[in-house]
Image (tube, rainbow, N blue to C red; front, side, top):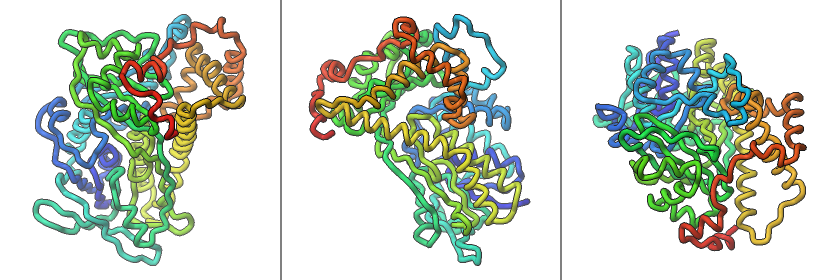
Length: 496
């Protein structure tokens, strides 16, 4: 079917939608509010690309195996372009502990447990240049979508195009399908709700504030070897992760619970950020001045909301001719690294739906049904973990708090059972990674009797017998860290 498709936004969501739809032959126009990337390489894009519409552009990014596999299988030339630009692939063997290596035997499926990682600007630059090579795709930069064009229809509210403003003034663009990839700041759904569309939404705080700083290895310096302490960790009052990137760069992200106001205020200063990293054994070798230097300021991101929208409308369609992908449809806590993969999965679901039927009612309802089936389990899993983390953060700031017996048992099962089992048994690591990489339901592996039996055996084993499976302490406790940083560990207690 020959259709004109209007895509709002040339971020990851919009670009993934173009990747999915361009091979179908549809006429595609991408409307992007921000300027085109500067001419030049990845470093120039990182330094000079203005993307006001993407607040998290310079935060750490990674493509999970689900998205990396889509790119590799659907667009092998793009996959090659990304690697040629310096993007990194981190495979299964990087996840193995010393215990795993004692009897590890590679399996064919291991090659699919790969994270594709890079600076976000590099990922977006390479994908955009690849998309622009399609003759049926046009990207209009510095074109702001003012509103959707709608009209009444016997079947419901129908979107027929968009009203835009650019250097030449305001104009209307008509399309057969409008796809909203405008991200977290898109106002299209709010407009549709105001006009009567029965779109439902649930939203709650992710409970964290996010801080990222970029670094570059010094000339001639190799990446530090992986330590047992690990480059990711959770201190309760602070989570951290290191992301190898392209062209000798890497980024570190630190996350604090929202109530940690003193730490939040201090961490935006590069010297404090670096001081924290230097006191975390898994990060210290990377931020050693002999190994690297800071290449950016500290980028903060707050007001992180998880959000699930249902645009299907049940038996009666909420809206016709309109679809949303990425953060415009579902927002997730960036801590889990699923945002880009959510965008890609929803884009390829949309491709399948548009190809399979031309009926506008069937399209919107089939799209929402498949999105719910494929993405909702990961959303709920994330939401439940966020709620637990928020409770723990408040408890840590509550003077005299003592966890209940149930809380202690759950903590022990996770730390002395699940985590020890995953760090000891390569088969269980494979099972857990299938959920992490969005290759199956996130909790499916825990429900398999053989896996659960293994975990229970590890749980009841004495700690002395499994001592090698515990990672070293990831860093100082809260009181010690605050003292090292010259902060008051008691300042936020009264606000808990």
